[in-house]
Image (cartoon, rainbow, N blue to C red; front, side):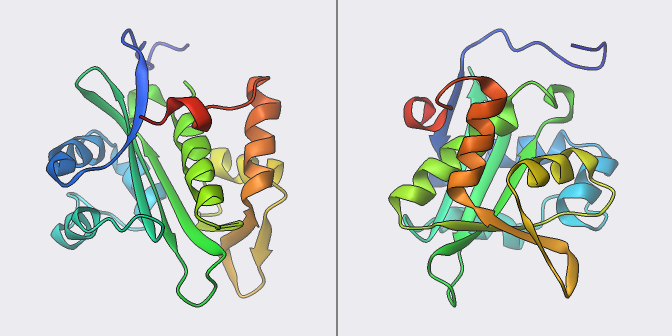
Length: 182
């Protein structure tokens, strides 16, 4: 752990978003640096757009899954997938972890829980967008044998099973998703 990283002292739990937790999602995004917001949205976003908060309020199980990582009352991260209407076995995945906890496994917990939910919903492939400069995400995409879209150097697809295998190889365990979701 480096000096810019906080320790999490409470147990970390991952759970599905409920409509009343929108303020917690806002707290995650409000805790991001300009650089992290740029990496997540590919544009400067000073505040979480109201339209995005509305989307989160309309979670549809099996179509759009939204998870929060929490330690006590503190939100640590946000993850989501949304099923592709044209390719029912594919979903777009996105993750965000508060800046002071990057590299502490919060993103892995969220990714594994999202992959578990996707598998249960019949989603076999994830798609994501990431900037060429986002080295941490690009390294994980390589571990998942992600395939770059030939027409869009920010879009990648990969098997949900490959993500789970990469997480297991990294953590040396069976992953997080089966037991961490509450």
